[in-house]
Length: 119
Image 1: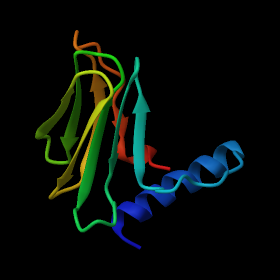
Image 2 (image 1 turned 45 degrees about the horizontal axis):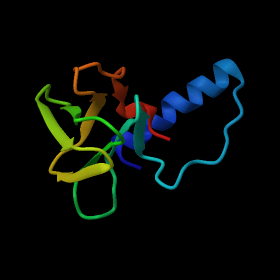
Image 3 (image 1 turned 90 degrees about the vertical axis):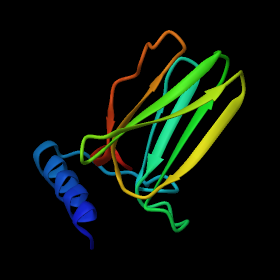
Image 4 (image 1 turned 30 degrees about the horizontal axis):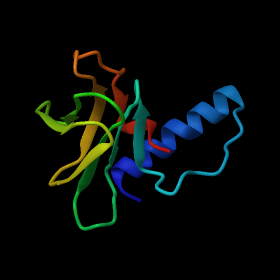
């Protein structure tokens, strides 16, 4: 078990122990973090299984531009944008993503979604 997996497991175990929450089945990729925001969506996966260290995805339902803003653990930031309705883009990355958010054309953004929220 890697350090990331161990940290996630520790957070989940502590939450379950303190709150008595029942765990349900995991999604197809337990390491994927996703958000849906005003007819747009974004996701990242730090263990995509495709040879990349991480993977990001953004989908635009009906906006002029949608931007996925993602931050690495060293504090640097990357952007992935898609233009036009019903469009999407993906990118493979060489390092893990710490958090991401989806922003609309007017730069109205979702809350940051953190890596430990996976699954």
